[in-house]
Image 1 (cartoon, helix red, strand yellow):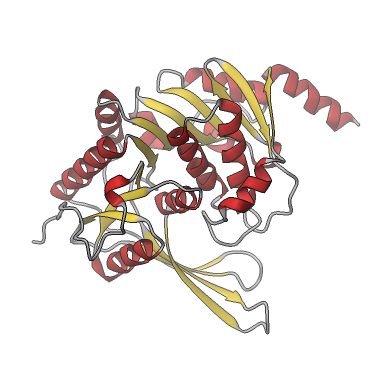
Image 2 (tube, one colour; image 1 turned 90 degrees about the vertical axis):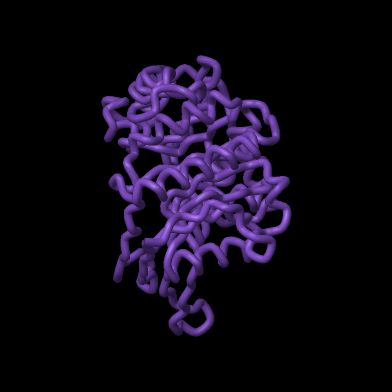
Length: 338
């Protein structure tokens, strides 16, 4: 039976600059995405093939914003090998953990304007040796880089989400700053160690941390998570982003744009938060960068995409202010009555 190979990729496979990476992104389920779109020129079929998955989208935005990224993930089969090559072609260094099974893939038809799923291949579940190799690779690359962007699992795929608690404790115990974009079982497994938790308001409600989507309920839910995470950022779609840093609440309001595709906006925000941490930005500047990255992404089809110079323009149009969540609810009530 093939075993996982956690040796760092050889120079012919690894992107230049990996040894000087300052951000490690954990991608437990990299995949291949195939999108069928209508060409804007003549309406003919346009097929776009890219590496994807939550960790990939976070890494892509972080790299666009100037971070030196190393992505850690399992890669197996023809799909996994193709995904790794695509990532390296984008300038993202890959710490590939070789596995016996195949990575996942999906095909979407977007010619009608919305995403219609045609087919999906789910990733293979890792055996215990492959899981050990993957988590060891994450720990060593995290210690090397000093900052880790941690992404989650879908439906408990790939490995037992309870292992998130162990790896976060080990990373934090070795001085690694952790930006985690996780919810559900992975978040419940973590009892301490997250530096910045990024989560959506829908996830807050679904996981039982918030009773509803009001600002006060979200803030109360954030207070319930302080043992797990030092700082918390909750994305609330077009309403903005509520953040809790050092016990104070902040609201970041994005520029007004017409969305083309909401998917991937939260991952772009996480990429922005991770880059802000590597640059040592202030709370307000970090929220401006992350909110701008997420807002730009909704204007585009590609998840985790957008040029740094365009994010900079959007950043100038993000409003950040310290707030009382109860006052925000009153403002929303008055606005609804007008």
